[in-house]
Image 1 (tube, rainbow, N blue to C red):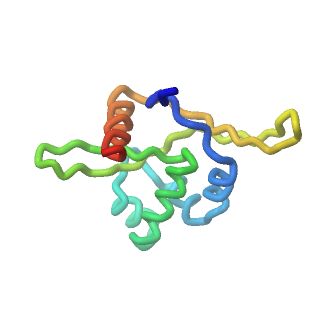
Image 2 (tube, rainbow, N blue to C red; image 1 turned 90 degrees about the horizontal axis):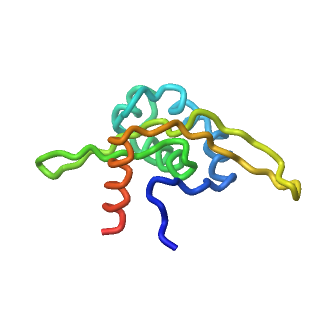
Length: 124
């Protein structure tokens, strides 16, 4: 079965809770403003750049941030990060297992194209 590039996979609850438990990740969520580069995030949050990259990866894997690629004519594409959710809901499943639901914000067509381009780049 082919994966729908516009339908994000459900994140692993451990990834979501781990990211939300991390003070640096929470700072990034609180201070990110629109699409920001890793350098922008590091400066705004006063976090070392090497740490920022790790935290951005954690947040992206947890589906709390979305990585977008800004295409440039010179071929040097820039990654930017934006919040990818409006809320996180924890609930108990029928078998009493803990489930996390990440409530997504609606993406613009440009954001969907950027996400698709990012996925193409990962597979090549």
